[in-house]
Image (cartoon, rainbow, N blue to C red; front, side, top):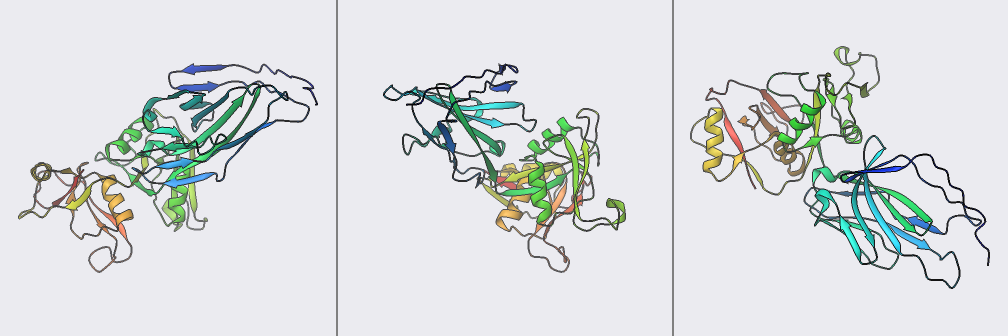
Length: 350
């Protein structure tokens, strides 16, 4: 039997806990003669699901006792969610023997799959938009530990948004709230990049979740970075989250409910539109719900209708004359005077 050769402690920093978040400023490195004897493995590095669904983040481990014939240390399994700045980790789930604990918004929604004694896979139920991101599976046995990172991606749609007051009027915090108000979250760079690859072209810069400001161009032209530049996602870099003023790119996914155009005998003012949906047992639909219905359900309607933000839009999935003849898109009419009786209304019934 070969014994432990050396133990090297490198006191770089320390770990501090803040609420449900853990800020890692250091770790201790253990060096053994035969290298690590605890190995964490994942079958896939990305799992794709949708809002309201369930997902299993795969994680398995192999381990050996350091001393032959001695009982193994208790296995500790910890799941955290990584943030965009890489310094903070949001606690999700911890298990050690019969002791288990979940944190924050994950309470009641996560548990270990436990298909075998070496299975540390995490099951997340009733997926929310906020669950999107990267998760770390960490397994600890005595002085040994190993980790793996898995991405949880959502099927959905990215859309640009600006408020009634006009373009370039949102700081980062207002941009986050604007997306939430329209049944969405602020989009990540990866989500915007995937949308650009799918053809999204938008000439106004918008906030992303990491605090950067960017915009996707598939058709280079003079007002949008130059006519002779290559297509791509233009990057303004990181901006002051309080003072910077831009639009925002939002992301939304499937919803549990019904999105529909309300058949009504007359055109409506904004206030009448709100009340008409209420009278129908619903609420006036949000921008994110229209985009989700259009992108994920191929909803198609050539009638402009009021939405919750005071805008008038209509979704076209089958381009045709007089109804977005050149492309499938959510058409934006504008922010009319709310007293004008010129439009119908789109409703959402949960």
